[in-house]
Length: 129
Image 1 (cartoon, rainbow, N blue to C red):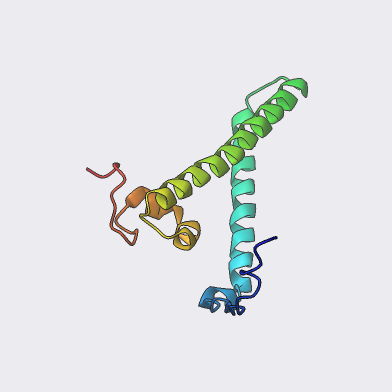
Image 2: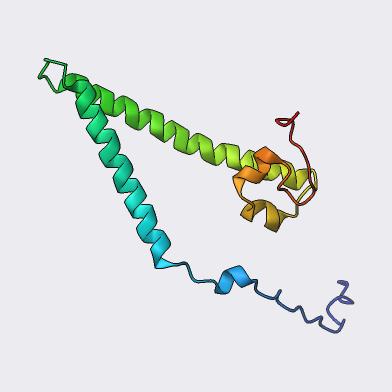
């Protein structure tokens, strides 16, 4: 006969955790506008200086520029993926060592992992001596 004693126990009500202030916080549209302006300004700055540097080149073939574009896309793609891995490793380390709670480790700014002094436990990660 199966053990049904666990099924006969009174049910336990589980309450959902209270939502934090960050959940109800609405982002400012000015921040999005500022981010767009910064990105567009960076693209214009890089394009202007790239055109200025390449103005002395007399070669009109597109092949070198296509290769340069492919190389830049590959390099930026690698850095993008590598950033995800580095962030995951940093978060996993602070969670595993119990120096931060999992929720705090996920929302903490990456600068706190580098500086150490801004983390709640006042840990120093070895870069400050």
